[in-house]
Length: 335
Figure 1 (tube, rainbow, N blue to C red):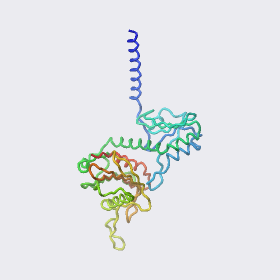
Figure 2 (cartoon, rainbow, N blue to C red):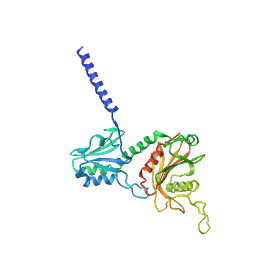
Figure 3 (tube, rainbow, N blue to C red):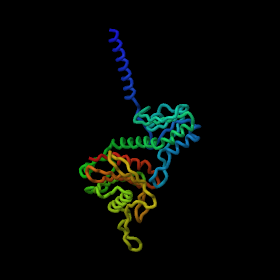
Figure 4 (cartoon, helix red, strand yellow):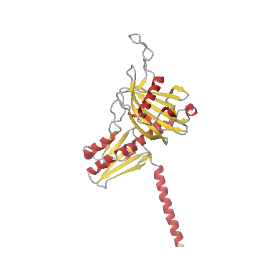
């Protein structure tokens, strides 16, 4: 009888703890914060010294592929003594803890949800610097992944209704209904959104399986293809006009030769893909901007799927616009 009562008591205690944990999870506040903004919880003296420099070296290095230098993230330093209440609800937090064994811990939904908290510990300042430097790529990857997921979540609130993408290309991609169709063909879609000082674009298309070969010239092949698409579909304001000498002007989008595109292999929708990003311009015109292109190998359907985002936004920062386009592309699901 005593054993039965003891077992019952233990079970009630365990269930009570589970209920409390579930209640805690249920009542987590929604996270907040601007896109690409990271809160750094660190003492003022560390922030102003070598530790702060190490953090900035990782999180504020320039983004490759933009016309002007822009940092990966905007940082806000918060002393630990004021890190409470509202400021703990930021979506991305880097927290430093001194006088502990050197380590880095990645945590989810500590103070709010969705949220990523990265805790870096060390017994000395050099320990902290070493941990940050050794894990810099991972820190950036985790925070960028959170920001892309957040942008996808925001856009999901007002999804487009273009069913013809699925019907013609056999794939789905998520973007906001504010994007309007600019051009549609059997295997090509171009969408456009007006922004404060310009416009943002998405192109979706398919290519024959033999259009790209995996060799040392793959990036050259991809650039040649995107330039041919630009010539066919994205014309400049002066295209077909006549210049002062009576010559017809040809103006269309090409990849800028003076800026070497970034290129690497990656995975999109569990499929091998090539990521290419750089600067575009219009021939015989003064328009230009940043682009990001993913060319996905669809082995099942014996084809390549291309998705590209590019932006024209003179005199303003382009970082957040490009992150949105990347978030759109990475939402693709190929049948």
